[in-house]
Image (tube, rainbow, N blue to C red; front, side, top):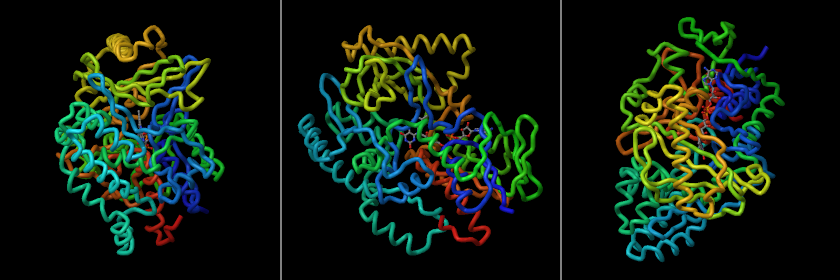
Length: 494
Ligand SMILES: Cc1cc2nc3c(=O)[nH]c(=O)nc-3n(C[C@H](O)[C@H](O)[C@H](O)COP(=O)(O)OP(=O)(O)OC[C@H]3O[C@@H](n4cnc5c(N)ncnc54)[C@H](O)[C@@H]3O)c2cc1C
């Protein structure tokens, strides 16, 4: 009889772990607290419109990359997948001027030099390092601790220029980096997409992924992608249990013997793969003593390892609104959470018919929230929370209408959600939908998947490798199974 792998969480990591477990010949069962798969990679409907929660870009859409093979194996992508036709990362506007980061780097270079000739030297350096950043591909063939000399040599060859990016941009924050530009518009542009405290290199790598055609958006959006993975898992013979919240991992000395659900039911297992946020793993499923020291240190230092969340609002507007797919605007300061913001973006979703209904399309905005903002939301009573959300929703709409007068009176409110939504829905730590961020103040967190003192438990999920995201989540599921195979001295090539 095959050994049984029990997986906690039916997000991208849990589904991937399940699919690879079945491919490797194990029995696999997933226990998910919600009623649908996908975790953070989902969308939902309001007033007949679809709202997307996740994919702004999906790293690994370029054929020939290791990650593409993983997405294909788990059924998320296929050679026939259609992608949104979007030709830019985003546009920033300031004081009547605008600048766009196009997927075509030459076009970006030309445009930035036109709007800010005083920054020509810095712009050319940026574009040169963007080209180098394209070499930063996510290694998804096997966990790094299983790499041999050949793997390192091949990575060194493929990423020969990437150390130049790390040298130039690895140790400074985006805020510091933006000051190298004289143009106030370019200063805004560099800080608009990611929080200012993040390392500058992470911004270059993000944009390079888009510019390299390796970060497309699959048509049908996030929920459909998760459902494709769920279908693949079931087709291979996996079982997924919904509305099944896990309370504890059962331990017997150095072995995890199974899981206990909040209903009291105990499910036995040969292997347990927690594929949730790691906060519930260390503070609920297991005694805290199993938490690695560097994880504890990261929780204790939110300045160096900030949570990434957002206050988000969706509206339906006339389909004709098309001022770029994602456009950042200057706004009258607005307090969201505990901080004040003077920039905001509007993303128009009309690129995919799933977001269009009766001549109207969905637009969304997300104002970044972090630990201190989460604390603010947490202090509110239910009534205050609803009131603040409603007031902010109106204030956000007013600011959008100032920037885009054609939308005045044309915005139908669909939904608003906050860091507390992610905490409630996914048990996400401080509502964070990415893992530990890499800032110049912190170290990159990387877990090897095993916990000291438990022999048959393998951690998966985006928190195993900073800064998280879909690529880390999907690869972590595969890696967990490869670690199990290795422990049984079996071939890890799956
Ligand atoms: C607004 C937004 C935009 C994003 N944009 C991008 C993007 O453009 N590109 C990108 O790469 N990433 C993006 N991400 C991040 C991406 O969604 C996550 O990195 C990824 O989905 C995490 O997957 P995961 O499986 O590790 O965790 P999760 O999605 O958190 O899955 C964990 C699962 O465990 C379940 N669970 C938790 N506790 C229990 C319990 N006690 N019992 C049973 N089940 C439990 C949860 O319900 C959940 O389904 C975005 C996220 C958000 C929210």
